[in-house]
Length: 448
Image (cartoon, rainbow, N blue to C red; front, side, top):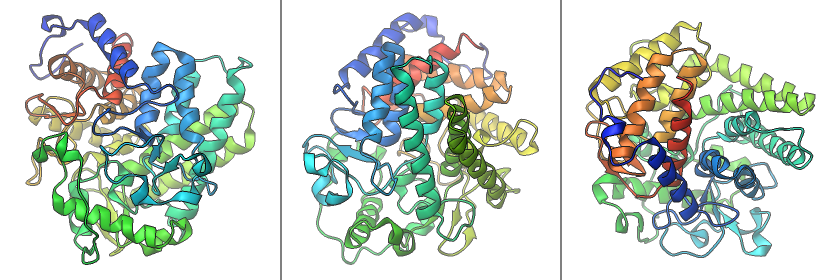
């Protein structure tokens, strides 16, 4: 594997690939709670939606049945309307705020009667992508696995239909997020203008827990958190009636990365459904994906050479260049000229910030290499980009990103995210999805 930037040589690190693999598996075992994993035992002691999806890939490498079980546990808490929530609160734990008492979703959760509550919003829909990845590594004719796969396909299909009904009620073609947490990119610069209109006059007192376990300079600001909680209070006042929340939210952003994940997951879902003989789901998922792919055109910013967010409240395109605008590689064909432009953007960003892929254009004035989603590199995003590049035959660039991602873990450990300019580890340590992606990248080195 080759790279255009000087990166640490894996063989010179305390962990060679075999040792790195063992350490990654140990992190997953440490964070395993039997039927689900926690992202990190201190900052995030519950089950998170897209964390579990990515982590299932790593668990599958250890124990295939356990990998599938992770997805089953997540979908067991799918709401009756089809939403798969972003947090499942399996146990009481006061190390995280806001906990289940603050969300107060109660009756909406299918297992609320058993004492297991959930949050009231969702997260990036990567379930379909992960489902196909596991399916490709499994025997779907296995009489034990086949019904599990069919159940997960049905759950993903219901969730994707929920997006159309509740996050694109006017059928504009793309779905909106109604809270930054739904994007998974909590404090991204994409939201700076949109969050200014979120009022905090009625904000109830609260105490953050995340900054007790991680450096404050690496986390969202207090001003960000005030608006996050204000939005939560708005939705709670509507008793989490999802049919009302889109129009009630003062924050409605169309995120190209979020929509790209939904498109790619629908395409993947369609292929898995076809393998399982479910022609109706296969056709439905494929239609949804094609419709949304065409609608992505509205988010293209020719001046930046990438996709950008759209503020549905003011009907205006953003001028900010974040990693979300590169993720539509998941949805484009290699023949689309915009794919080559996005690949060029990735190369240029890595020329400036070579340790993984920055979450914000490293040449922009809002770039902050240590503050959460305003600059740091995240291995799960790197994996999504690598997957896109390999699917499009852009192996050299994929190799470069794989190598830099592995070098990050080899030098800084299984951290939540990383400084893309120095390679320093940031946020929490012993992170499940970082360990899972490490196993993925170690496996991909055999394909490059």
